[in-house]
Image 1 (cartoon, helix red, strand yellow):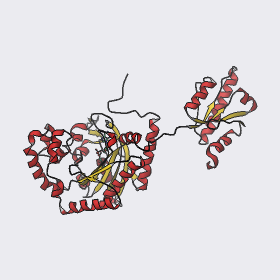
Image 2 (cartoon, helix red, strand yellow; image 1 turned 90 degrees about the vertical axis):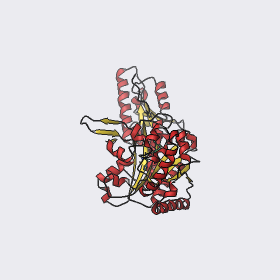
Image 3 (spheres, rainbow, N blue to C red; image 1 turned 120 degrees about the vertical axis):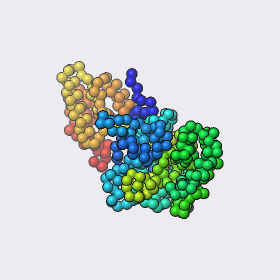
Image 4 (cartoon, rainbow, N blue to C red; image 1 turned 135 degrees about the vertical axis):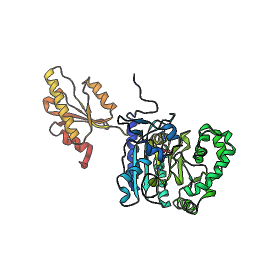
Length: 430
Ligand code: HAM
């Protein structure tokens, strides 16, 4: 048997209903915060990610699904959504329109990671980006949206961690001292961190290996090296968070796993999820637009994994309960007379088609098992009504309607039954 590739998921009903509910919630909240949807390709030129996410990051070094197409192009299945959004923003001339541009996306991302609960090789991300605003209010706007999503899903007890990692100006001053500190303890670092030490010492602070984390704990902190612009942004950010009542914890070691960030970085964690408890990750990236060939321009955003959100929702206060039902199941009993049987099937199928054209959801049993089995099928589908069209009904021009919820049964003339059902199910709304 051919199995699905490791780290991928098949989303089956009823689970797929929970996805639909979550995606609807994300679209509704995007509208509330006035973000518009953007859809970008699932693969891009590899260079887009190596230049922006960073050559020395885990994503670029170890996790990308990179391949050559038949034309010899070097392509990569997108591991994240921010670089593609900025690429499209510039390529399609959105930078020439009204700014800031507020965009959201919802789609699969691909990373060759070690799969475990909440971490997959193909996963769905929802993300938002505000392009063209340097304001700390925009940082708080995206954070506020992220926290609202968690609240709407009933996730109590999330913690918002924030930090600033400055800009290239502050980083230059910090870098020297950081390299000195790391070099003194080079013997304790893992081979990856040793290799990154000179090129990108900040990455060492993001390493998950225990000895490297230990070295990171007393490393020089970026906040001591901030330039006046970054310092001001950092202070303003915290005062806005306080003014809108968003509680936060400053984590001076939070640097995030992608290189494009400047100034603000943040994560929202929900501890009951265990090892993979970061539901949202984001920050500001004021150099990214320029890096991709645009005029210098700021940006800020976040992304969240939908699988993690759904795992969390199941454990939270308000699990998403899929409500699954159909309006009407048409039961078509067989008759001993072949011709009558055919007539029943034709009438029954016509009736079902009428229901469906009237926006009523419906189904039937194409295998035409016994009436008992057809009724069982109707129950499994959680049908609100059953319409029975058998030999007697055909003779009298009637259909028997049974309300599965209330238990009553009525006979309705075949010409009126569609209107009757519309009235029953849709009431005055049709
Ligand atoms: P990220 O931290 O790499 O950031 O990913 C954001 C979120 O995606 C994570 O917090 C997690 O919920 C989910 N996620 C990441 N990897 C996996 C995985 N292998 N399996 C399941 N879920 C996963 C970014 O991607 C940035 N582009 C976020 C951003 C947008 N920053 C600014 N704008």
